[in-house]
Amino acid sequence: MNAASATLRLPLRRAVRALDDPPTAPGWNHAELVDLPSAPPYRAAAVLVPIIVRSEGLSLLFTQRTQHLAQHAGQISFPGGGVEPGDHDAVAAALRETQEEVGIDPAQMHPFGYLDCLETVSGFCVTPVVAELDADYCATLNPHEVAEVFEAPLAFFLDPTNLRRRCIDYRGRPREIFEFLYNGKNIWGATAAILLNLMLRIQAVT
Image 1 (tube, rainbow, N blue to C red):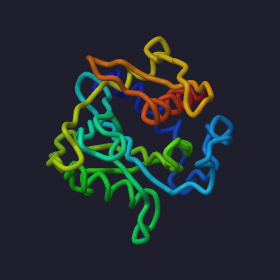
Image 2 (image 1 turned 45 degrees about the vertical axis):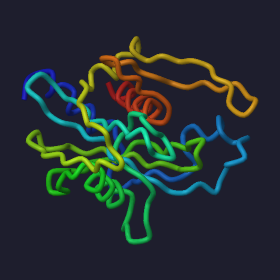
Image 3 (image 1 turned 180 degrees about the vertical axis):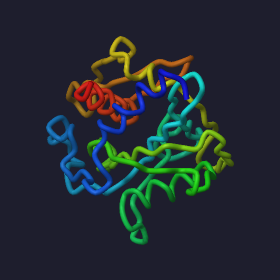
C-alpha cells in the first residue's frame, strides 16, 4: 500500500459509522423528498460501497445496469437492492445482493462501517455498507442485471471540484441532483448522493 492509500485509509475508517451503530431512517436527505407521493413508509434497501486498495491508491467498484431493467436501466450504481425477510441486517442484504449481481464471494468482502441512510424518489430508504474488497476479487456478472463493472479512484470523488449540481423538474417541482463525470461515465442520482455523503463525512474528520 502506498502513502496515498495509507493517508486515505485511516480517515475513511474514522468517517464511517461503526458496524454496531447502524443508521436509521429518516435519510439525511429526508427534507428534500418529504413532499413526494412516495413519502414514508419507504422500503428498506442496502448497497455495498466497495473499497479496493491498489498500488496507485484506493478505488471504488461500480456496476452499470443493463438496458432492459424496469428500474434504473443503464445507470451506474453500487451493487445492492431491497432488504429481504431472510436478511439478518443491511450488511447481510448488501453482501447477498453483491454476490447475486456480480458474483463476488462474500469471503472477499470485509464490511467495516456505514454511511448515512438515503431516501430515493423510487420509494427506498437505502443503507450504504462500506466494505474493503480484496484486490484479487473475481467478478462474474449476472447478465440479467449488470452490463459491466469498473473501478474509479476514491480521490476523484473526494475532490469537490468534480461534483456537479443541476436542477431538474420532477413532478412539477424543481429538485437539485448531483453527478460526477468520470471517464465518460455519468454517475448521478442516488449513487452520486451516497458519494457526496462519503465526501462530507471524510471532510468532517480531516
